[in-house]
Length: 482
Ligand code: NAI
Ligand code: MG
Image (cartoon, rainbow, N blue to C red; front, top):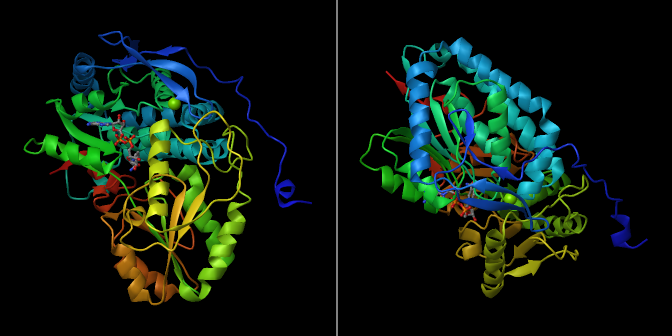
């Protein structure tokens, strides 16, 4: 049996008959779907086949003004006056409705964004509803979250999210804002607006008072209109460091609060005493999960010299068995790259890696003709100063270096502008404590990677961001503590 045949599975396609999508989505403002002031629409496509799925409205300044006004009225008249216990019931209802419709949401997430159905089904959608459940529980317990302090809500919050975990990011932002008594104007990313629009339907169904949550679609200019609106009290952003810097500059000198969750260049460290097979599987997951479209992806790998050859060989073997293709197939490991723009960026970095003298390995896999695809890629013979080691690629591309001592690898891991996450693989608890203490990153996983829970905070050091989301910490950014 050839190697290829050994890994071939029959397709196991997730059905799409059960999903309900409209051809066109208007803005969700004041509890109603409303056309934009200019009547402009843009398309969202399926990145796995480049086919148009639906059109969504493009919101301009006037629409944002209307959304903020509605959110302000809802804040003043109902939401800020409602007891936490009552707010909690609404959030709980959203969580339940999401859970009931998880299958539909998973499929829509996969066709709009390109991620494998296994991930939308097992990670994105369950975690999104878990966030609503978790924060529903805090709504009437804020006095216990911050003992001795008075927890005051802020007012209207503006939330701008990216395309890598569309519904999950919406839930990270909306759930704590509602639990703390704030109202929301949220903008999803322009390539993945559909689960946010479906969430708007759930919010309607949950009977939230009109204007408490408003969802507006559009690209950068729509985002800017939110950032610069004078009546917005807090901006919560996840996305590129570049836009994060723009936001900081724009709101400097205003009294707007902000949390920014930006890029990353996480180091995974494998010591010679690690369980190598477990580590290899973890590395594969950390960089190829969601096509590497993960801000905390383990995009740099440091392997102790004595086991480097073994680890690299095992990584190559495992890579050759990864299944790249139709995201709706339950066997698929690596789905479609989210957009042509992102694919071009990844290709640019792969070319650059070769120019910088890196040794590239890609397993032979036949990529579909239509759509945006990239093979899993590793580079060896790279060094700290290479751009592919310093800059965020946001794709399935891993740079591998070796090290001899603990101090050396800590220095290398910290030698980056980012500080979002990291991973350590070792049999020794003492090394775990040393590495997690000395690496400047918001989250460091030990002998695992990419594990999330609504109760644990997430946020970065340095250019990876400001403030935390998740857990009790995640409430803080939505409150004035007096
Ligand atoms: P982006 O930062 O431009 O987009 C994120 C969100 O911000 C989208 O909703 C977008 O419409 C909005 N936006 C864009 N310009 C804005 C502005 N001036 N003011 C307010 N909102 C604005 O990210 P993009 O261009 O999609 O991806 C570029 C790179 O950013 C990626 O290659 C990746 O390296 C990084 N990125 C990081 C993410 C993370 O989770 N930390 C998520 C997405 C991208
Ligand atoms: Mg799309």
